[in-house]
Every structure is written in C-alpha cells, then in structure tokens.
Length: 566
Image (cartoon, rainbow, N blue to C red):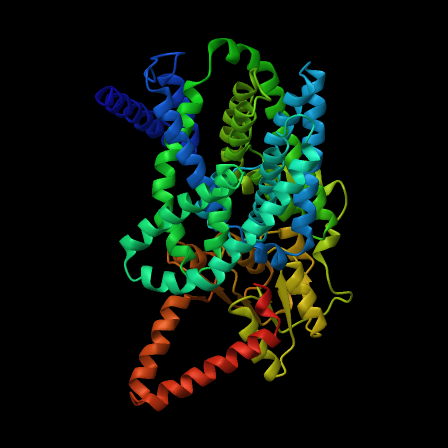
C-alpha cells in the first residue's frame, strides 16, 4: 500500500512538473498547472489517483490548513487603516454586488437556492497567491493600485473568516441554530481571549529563544499551527478556523516575515496536492454539466469585478488609471472558493457539479486575468480613448489655482518628504505630485501645494506647468512611470534638471536615454554616506551616539511631516 502511494505521488509530481513547465512558457500561474495535472491524473485520463484517495485528501487538508495559517499570519488590519475607508468600501461592495449577481445568474441557470449561494460567494474572492506574485513580478506592489488591491485582499480575507465562522455555526441540528450560535460565540470569545493572552505574554519570550535557531523556529511554527488548529477544533470550531487563529496569533510577532518565508515552501508543496486532488475528483459528467454555467460565471467575473472596483475607486477620488489597473488585477477567483465548496460538500449542503463549475471558472479567469495583469499598461492605453469620452479626470487636480513652480517633486513618501523639507528651508517655490489621496490630504493640511495624479498619465502631466520648472525630482520607484514622465517633459523643456530614482540598475540606461540628468540609487547613496562617516569621523562611541540622536530627530520630523501614512 505504502509503495503504491509512493509511486502514485512520484507519477503525479512528474505530471505536475511537465505541465508546469509548459504553463511557464505561456506565462501562466502554476495553480493552472496543478489543476490540469489533477485532471490528467484523475479518472478522466490516467486515473493515477486510485486506491489512495483518503491519503491524498489528508495531504490536501494539510494544504488548506497551511494556506489559511499564512492568510492569518498576513492578516494586517493596519494596512486597511493606512489605505483608508476606500479599500474597505471597495472590498465590501465588490463582495456584495458580485455575490448578489452571481446568485441571480445561478438561479436563472436553474440551480437550487443553497448551491447558488455557495457558488455566488465562492466567486467573490480574488486569488491572493496569484495577485501578489504577479504584482511582485511587475514590481507594482508599491504602486497606488497595487497597494489598493493588497488592501482589498485583506478585506476579502476578513470576509472569508466570517463566512467560515458562519458555516461552522449554521450546521446545528433540530432547530438549535440560535443556541449553537450563542454557545459558539461564547466559546469563541473565551478561545480568542486565551490565544490573545498566550500571544501577548507567553509567545514573545518563547519566540526570542526559539528564533535563535532557524530550524527550531520552523518546527515550532508547524507545531503551533497544528496545535492551535486542533485546540480550536476541540472547542467545536472547524480546523480551518483554527489555522487562521494560529496565524493571527503569530502575525504580531517581530519574527512574522521570517516565519512566513519559511512556511511558504511547505505550503506550496501541499497546495500542489490540494489542487491535484481537486482536479482528480472531477468526473466527465460533472465537466459536461459545468461548461455552460462555468463560462457564463467566468465572463461575469472578468467583467463585473473590474467595473465594480473601477467605479468605487473613481468615486473615492482615485485616477482613472489606478482604478482601471486595480479592477483588472482582481478579476479572478481564489483558492478560498475551493475551500468553501469543499466545506459545503463536507457539511452535506452540496451534492452536484458545483466543484466542477468553480474549476471551470477558475481556469478561465486565472488564465485570462494573468495576461490582463501582465499587459495592464498596454490594455489601459487601448481603453483610454473610450474612458476619456466620459469627461476629464477631475480626481487628478487637488489645487485650485495653476501656478508656476521652480521645482516639482514626484512622490512624497520615503525620500520625497526630506527633499520637500530642504526646499521649504531654502524658501524655494515647489509643488508635490503624488497618487495617494492620504498623502495629498496631509500635504494640503501643511499648506504645501499638491497635485493628485499619476506620473504615467500623460493627460495629467499636460495639466501641470512642468515646462517652466527648473528642477524636477522623482522619488517614485516605478521605472516605466518615470520614463513616461521624463519623455513628456523633454518634449517641451530641454533645459530643466531632472533627477530620477531607482532601487536597482536594470532600467538605469533606459532612464538616461530618456533624458534624465541623474538617477538616485538609495543603496549606493547609503553606502557612500557610510563610507564618508568612516573616513571623516572618529570611530568612537560618541560619533555613533550623535548619529543615533540625529536619526531619532529625523524620525520625529518625518512623523510631523505626515509621512507615517506610508
């Protein structure tokens, strides 16, 4: 039996690697490869997963637990606070509208009430794994639309946790739903209090000792994850909720980034088996019944999610470019949708082709949205003439009077605020351009001229008096956005000094060819500063004590300047 399962895993991994290699050539997320590998290994084709169903389902359960543990580990409520109410409103509206219309579509297709509810909720969640990976590849996690989408994913995670808790309490028998709800709420509060006390008083001291060894930290994290999940399960909740609670309890630890990075490879291995099992459970009859509703729902997700987020972000004051890019980034379904469907089957609510329908929706939306995210800028330029017909982008302007400024500073966070302090001290006329509404609000409160807009939006750049500026300083991290701005400025202003910013040298030559005078590279400047300290100052305790004092004063100034919003 063991040898047979070992051979099955070997064959499954071989199939997965082969499909994954092909998917990489097509620039697709590997989740697509995992599902297709499951289809090939399942009864539809090779029927490799035969005789070891319980074993593979156990492994898939491990994948769910580890996935939800990392969700809890990364559940950063402060992120929502920093992004403001727009991300909360966008997340709730996107969930509500998508769920309502998804339910209507399922009912029109002839499905019963309960399956329609499950599918409608399952398609509301966007894939955290895919979105974060593609945004990181494009280096757009710090872009305004990237930060908004990450905040949206956090809101969706919170809603997902609420859905899991509701499912856990809704399975009461003999009409005891309210009693079960009250008992569950009471046990949940006691459990949360216990875990909170552990996380606040015991874990910090324990983690300081455990973290001295990377290997011990890894083992401890796994033990904590499964231990807390089992404790929560023993208290009457689901293992999935336990995994999320375990993650949240470690999320506030200073070792959270290290824990997360060490757990991801293990999670990815079990997630492979999770999706392989998912694909292997699909039957030919289910596929036939799922094709039509799957295509209809996939079309709805690809259209509805971008439109909803676009309208919400525009209403909240974001530029049409940021709203458009955020919308198409969230246009796919999540791995959590599958967890929800599996839970519905486990509780006895679902007995039909719901899993196959969601699989069809996932394959279509993930494949198409991957290309949409990868080529989002080109797509935006194609759609822009249509969007312009709805009028000017009023959200871009934040100051009433147009003035000529000696200096324009693009980006107020990190480097930009210090540049602004120096310009203000020298009493030089300057204005700030930023695409974060909170930054603009802080700047206006301080009386600093500010424009809300995107450096890559040529229509917006034309509304600024850049052609009369003597100096333009860009502190934004995106190379493509800076290149667009530099090329636009050089068309009308050949004499101004332009300083750009890069965190790596990949696009250094591109910016110089575009016409920039100098490119700041913070890591090189940091090394130069340290070298000058070592050359020009004595290596004494007093030297570094003075530097420490200056640094703390800088941080106070940064807070006063309002850059704590980033």
